[in-house]
Image (cartoon, rainbow, N blue to C red; front, side, top):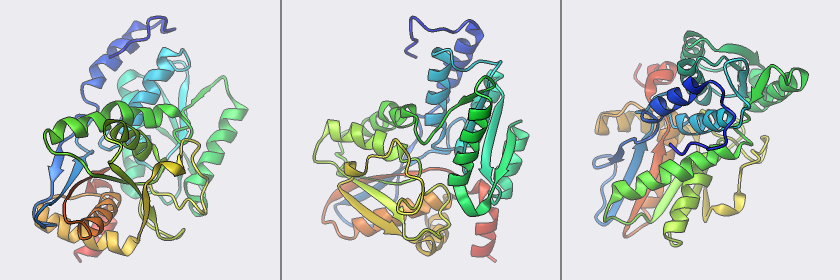
Length: 316
C-alpha cells in the first residue's frame, strides 16, 4: 500500500487494518466463457468480482474511498460514513468499515431486495429507507440532506462524485485484466453504467496501454428497467464522475434479455450471477457475433445470492 507520508491518522491501528484488508480487495479471476459462446477467433472473458472481501465489484471503490478519507483525516472511528447506495456499495462499505470499527449509515431505496436489507442490517449498518419511486436519485438527495444538517457527524462518501471511485479501477481492475490476459490482446472492454466508475477507471487504463482498445458503455433500454445498479442516464441524476465522451460506442440492453440469459449462464457455465453481470454478457455476446476476431472483456459485479426472487421466477 502507498501510505501518504504526511497523513493525519492518529490511530495507527486504522492503517494496520487497511493494510490487512487490502490483501483481500481485488485480484479476482478472469473467467473464459467457453460454452455460453463459441466462435473461432473470438473470445469473451469476465472478471468474477464477487470473489473478494465485500462480495462485489463495489469493494474496489469502497476501499479506495475509505482509505483516502482516513489518510486525509476526514474519517475515523468517531465519524460515521454516510452514502447512498442501491445495495452493493453499501454492503462493501459495511464490510470494510465493520472490520475497521467505523460506523456506517446508508440511504437506500425501500424496494431494495430482502437479501440486501438483511445483509446490511447483519453488518451493523444504519439504514435510512428512501422512496422506491425515486431509486438511487432519491437516496442521494436524502444523504446530501443529512450531511448538510450534520456535517460534524458524517463523512459523506459520495460514490457518484468521488474520484476515488474510478481511480480504484484505474489502479486495480485495468492492470489485473492486462496481466491476466498475458500474451492475449484485449480488443474490447464493456461495462454497464451505474456510478460509471468501472467504465471510466478501467477504460482509461486500457486505452493508455493500447489506444486501439474499444470501450463500450452499456445502458438500460428504458427508465423502467430492473437491472440492479444500472442508471438510465437520460432520466436519472448523472454521476459527477461520468465521462460520456470516453465510450467508443454505446449499447442498450433490456431487462428481459438479461434475465433470460441467467438460465443459460447457470446451466452452461456453472455460474450463479446477478442480473447486471448477465446484462454485461448480453452486450458481449451481441458484439462477439459481429466480430471475426477479438478478445472481449467485461465484468460480473456480483453473484446470485441477493437475487432469490429473480431465480425463483426463472426456475419455477
